[in-house]
Image 1 (cartoon, rainbow, N blue to C red):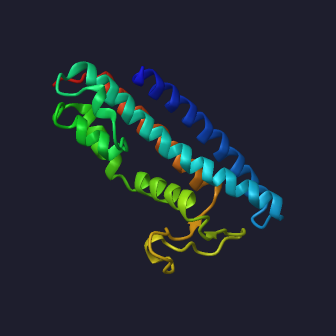
Image 2 (cartoon, rainbow, N blue to C red):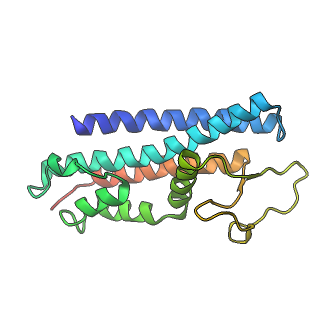
Length: 191
């Protein structure tokens, strides 16, 4: 039951991420300084894109955990109580499958800079509101590098360069992360 729910959730989150990213990208192509109603739609699509990207990774990890419970006697679905964020799931799966390709794929993903950016922006959007954005109006001036952006309050990421290319990069990375984990799990999980 948990595996099916996680699988369905992953598919739904990836589809929603794609849809909201496409809507956001199209809106930004139309106007970098839209009227309030369109700006509100952009902010909603921004939130939905990053929330769904993060959730797609989370659902994929929970899917692995559900399958791991069937293969490793030390893991049970009762272990699914409490936090089930990707690092928590990895912490439960790693001892049972230390050398498995799926464990390596999961470790790579939780350490990846794009995952950290997705997670951090999702958390800021969920709990603190909308951070400032760097919106370049063509012809674009030089972009502010991530590490050199101006200081913002603690826990707030630097301004984000909202271009269709960058948004599509998040979508592509997330889809690739999901595929890497699923393919690694499919190559065999031996305890």
